[in-house]
Length: 191
Length: 392
Image (cartoon, rainbow over all chains, first blue to last red; front, side, top):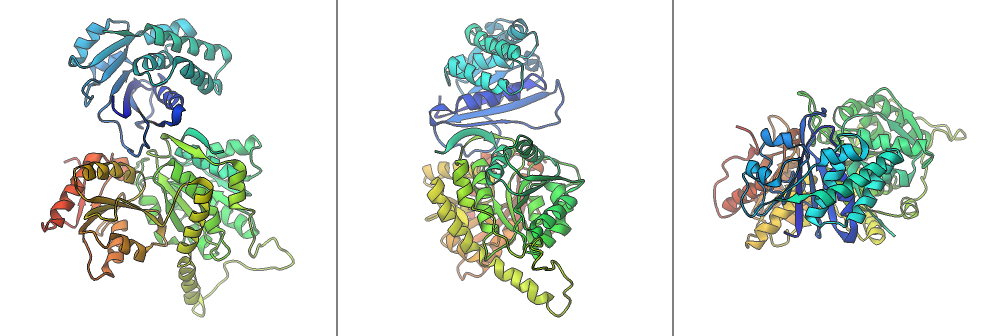
């Protein structure tokens, strides 16, 4: 992977995708790294497809435009695989992380990506339902991305989830999200 | 010690305002600025500042309240975008004509119609002739730094003028980036206590603001406004020098990026300048002598300095994220005026890009530099002004 890592998130409004990109940026701040996190702003409707982006680099980030050639594509809602080409512009060797209960091999076929690409799956919605009873897959997706990219240690990520969610939510919800992120980290599968 | 954070442009500027802790803040929401004043309102509610918030029913009222508070003798701020700035138009002239050093972050956004909430520079360019100082910012760090410096510039005893600090709506205001906050005490010390000049609340010495001046002295009054504007450049540079000592970050009237030996150059404001710098680096790696000039101080405009910086180039493209329909882009007109005073000047073209938040991509920058390379090699200019990134 190049000196700058670019991530493109695909989700639907209401799944916490934008929050996930923000938490990841904050967690990646350590070690003097430069970070960006920004969503594509359209009409904000629950269920509407949306994109969010991250850049993480050892160099100053001056590029202020959407990520066109991602190193990592995170698909928070697998139903998007039927309606948009999430692989568009992905770099040679790009990794795909998809929230689904299906097998990574099946997803690989659906994505029609080359042998250099890595495809990972994690049942993030199931994990979220188990851990805090809501179909909010962002925390387990963050855990999975943490494992796949190696950008930050899981401990640092969990600390950041605690910090970010701590401002808004009750302790039970925070604990549930931390458990969900940890399980996302542990349960993500490569295929 | 400076604190490294990952925050949005709006959050960064709200924090700069918190560190300055002004006396009065006029508050009215408008996308994409809303989030900045919302954060500032939280600082007020949580006792982090002792600013008096004036909640108003429109931006016209917000600027009117700021004018009253500033004339009364307070350090005053507000923030706005787009239609909000447009609605303030009448009062903007009163603020500058009365020489009131109000500080106003402007989160740049397109103007209606048709309705569009995204980033372009039409709002602030429309306020070009209102007598306000304008400082433009590439990213969250610059918006934060410029906001802090704006107090020293506008409140300088030789200046006493209102200042707009511009940054791109959404692209910067809502994007999280790494930046460094200065210490609260360091900012407070840098900005210093507010010094009054002719406060209305000094009841021992009654005075009048904005009286009727007809043909006898209005002409002279306006010349005085121009003359004080001409002193602003030196103050901006002095303040920048002090700020560099504090922060290690260097600011000028504009930023010249790899321009020294450049044959071809782009002049471009704000966030798109960052994207274009990456394009310049790629071209330099291929041996192309490309450079960039990013204006910072737009009013007053540094004509001589900019002409000097561009004098060795062969072809220049001025890129505008706003337009004057039936005319050239506003930045182009300024650069064109600056270059006209030189005997030998580069070929000059104008591109309009990114209106209403249309993405500006590295490929757009490459395309422009390729055209400039052809012109520099003796090729013909096919169109002086052109829209780029257009869906056909």
